[in-house]
Image (cartoon, rainbow, N blue to C red):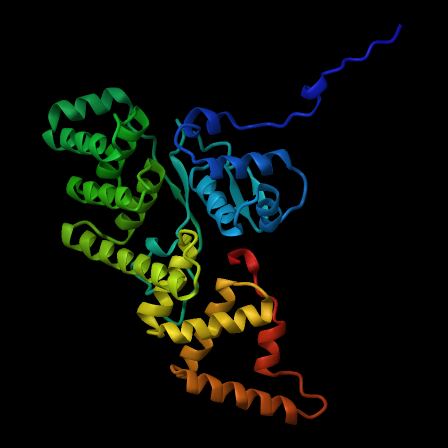
Amino acid sequence: MEYKLNLGTWGSVFVVPSDLVDLHLKLAGGVQLKVILWFLRHAGESFTVEDIAKALSMQAADVRDSMLYWEDKGIIKVNEGIIEPPDESINDMQRSKEVVQTAEHENDTTVNPGSDEHQVKASRVISRPEKPDMKYLSKRMSESPEIVYLMQSADEIFGRPTNNNDKATLLMIHETDGLPVEVIVMLMRYAESIQKCNIRYIEKMAISWADNEITTLEQAEKRIQQLTSGRNAAVTVQRILGLEGHSPTERETEYADRWMNTWKFSGEMIRRAYEICVDSKNKYIPKYVDSILYRWFSSGISTPEQADAEKNKGNKTKEKKPYGATYDISEYESTSIIDEEDA
């Protein structure tokens, strides 16, 4: 007699990382959980953000935000369209070798994010020593009222008792990275104000601040003002474009800060570039809008009249283009291949 095991509905299962349940189930929102469960279920398949949005009846922007959320939490790593687990060496007890993504606009104070070199810094790997153990932490807290104040402030700002990993990370930020306690507290309060009060984000930002020698309250306050200005610009751009339905991503915040605070474009000009993008690509692609505004900025075009004159000039050039001519800026705008990961 032959036997066959019938698992019924259990015959089709997929893997869910333990950390997702153990560390994030309580705090993650319903949208984030739906998104990660969907693409875990479809592992090995090719899909787009729009596919997920359609399947889950949600906005594509919310899908992108959710993917960024899980990437920030260390559950996934996205590299050139491939979603994969983070390095196995990164876990709750072994984050001594951290991959710090400084592509985020917030992490660079030495390069003006709105300057001509508006490409962000590449990711880098930071070699981190072992985090202090609880025996050493207890010793330091018995020796230093300042360390006690740091841990008590963390409990208050996080709104819960911080765990051993949180405490070890904060102590390491102070003793290894060299940030004063008062600067770390200011950084934590800023993270809490933008609803990113998690230890991974705080450590990443702290490393960046230490690298850029932001070690005083005055320097920290100035940096926070810069970050706040960028976030305000992003909210304004969302309103100008009629896209208030979702929170701006970090990359959209970077673009908005550049467009409004560095290049000083008016809302009308940003709207004009947006409309050109939608007419050409049938959807909003922030990177494409950025390329249009960058060209205008480089050419000294700052008013709708100047933009119209440039467009008319391009159309006339196209009409007169002799056989053999291969380049026209208007034609390039409508046909160039733009990386649409920002869409």
